[in-house]
Length: 245
Image (cartoon, rainbow, N blue to C red; front, side):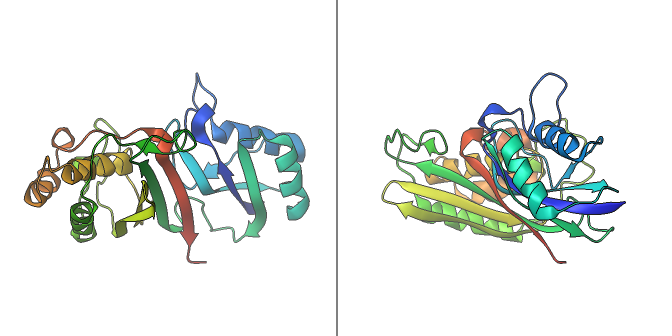
């Protein structure tokens, strides 16, 4: 069996997340169905991670295995012809047998987009804020995440994760336009709902509803109930997945 990586993007608006669901359409299901149709055998794909319902991916990776003869360029072309318009394949490539879309990934990056003025062209992929935000203070709080190991306070409760430890290497707000910003965060791994909870808590800092010291206390508590609300999924993008090899 030969192993292949598929690199692709998707608009998650119409999907119940990446992972196959019993009662909802998923990106994984669409990709598996297209690959199985083209290769003419039952293909299963493993993704670099799980995105929740409504979350998008600008660059996602998945792997599959087959004994069939594969022309990578032709397969990518055929996938783009067969897949729905909200899923786009960048390329297919053969990789070493021990390369794993999820476990071999060394860095994942997410962006969360917000805008502070009503804009009909941003509303589908950015979260509109109805109050002033102190972005300098939000970046001061974001820097604390680089010194943090345990992110239990930002993890969705009642999940089956074995550890809440993550190594965050980048976390900062960047101005895109007069009324638009994005939060960029990179780490070796992310917990379920983590980015949206982090952003929600940073928004509380930006509104001066919690202080920097209180932000530290929330992290130290490990309690999800003390952190901010989870932000809407439509503004969250899996921006990139990196591999050493």
